[in-house]
Image 1 (cartoon, rainbow, N blue to C red):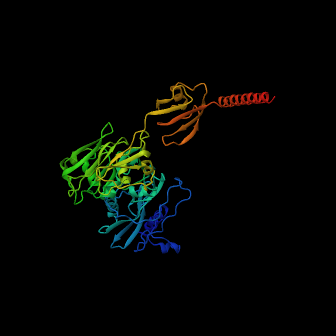
Image 2: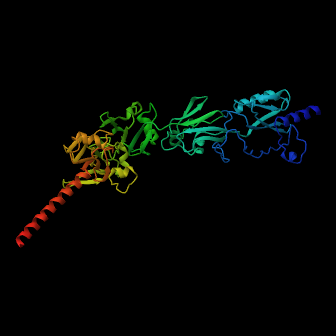
Length: 503
């Protein structure tokens, strides 16, 4: 190649931001060549710009790759840097993908790169250089992946922009945003592009089953949205990972068993049952043959029970009655405590009296033992009251009475029907109103445990509470005055009698 052509090519490389792999020459202010040294030295990592257009993205520290970059699937974008080797000439140089998506290749000129896989780019590069380097072996390798910003939004700990380095997968971007928050879904995470959902990510399948196909790589222009968690089911008994699992639409009992790690060696798949909540709130226990696992669609609240073949047919059950959200027989795993059992039957509703619940247990002699339990404390995280359940136990969660008691200075003391949100004055009116001596603005209200609070006609009253209407202050002082006058009259009369007798 003529000297002036090589110098011109070098000048073009300098203008377009393409540098040679001879950093020592550049440091010594020597003229860089279009084809540099034979040893490729990676450049230092670029510093973050202080005037970034996207202010405040989460900055990630350098990381290792979770696996080698696949040249067939890695999609090139602006900022990617490649090293090119020409053999046997011993020529090597570096190319950076420009913002327009192209690279400026010595001799070949501009070549499209963005949007292509590495393999596709290699083919385009070889076509461009073939006429200038006949018989040469042309190698092209990704040397330094680009960085870009994606937004991670929804139910994550710290939603907002995250700066990532390709190749970067969805789970890593979510981890950089602090992880999925407690109300968020791990199974229907959305990848959005141009305002449309282009894919969904299932982190549970990734973590439980190692399915990397559900964890794609990210590229520019994409964002991640974590929606709220959807319906959930429970699997208990002889599976490796018993517990609750979020389910996606269309999943079956077979999918749930798979997420739970499959059957243990002691499982009896031929005698499984499905606990399902009916519209009435009661539990329906259905036989679940193994042959129907793949066709049994799951519903919110379902519980799949896999019994132990060593103990069947003597399966242990606990019965829940009186309220609490689920009534009926529920399978009991060996050694299960009230705390671990609680999420399977309690549905937090304010018409059940969790604090006055009890366990009814039959003793060997036939007598009944009643164990009081405050389920409200367990719900708040206090496990000190948890007890080990036994087969045949009955958990009784009483329903709060739909009445309010009105007593004291009213026309018709007694029970009145509870209506959510009504103030005390309305309940007093339902009891005939205050008596002539009663004060509607001087009340005491007691809850079902005897706790007292002061109130007036506008105080909100809750189910099962008692309203005490007190006497008006004027009436009280009037009675005191009348009593004082009566006592004074009696004293004067006695004094007059005593004086008359003394004379």
